[in-house]
Length: 102
Image (cartoon, rainbow, N blue to C red; front, top):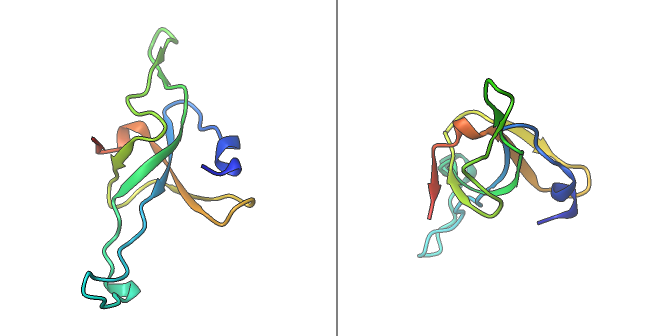
């Protein structure tokens, strides 16, 4: 994990993820053009907020933790580019994440 991602701490039930790399070449060596590449729906959790609050003000702990592999929806999330590195991250609410991959 980069230093820039360590400094970015999501609030409440937000989760910062880094999408997996898209497959750009087949096993046979054929290069797949960008327009034909499928959108990658798998990601790795980079940072997690402390969790949402219930009616009493208590924190509800998040179901995912740093390092988990998750399945994302096709659309949604906020794209985040940090100045220190040229990596692209996405910020999602925990409730928007579809599943945890084990």
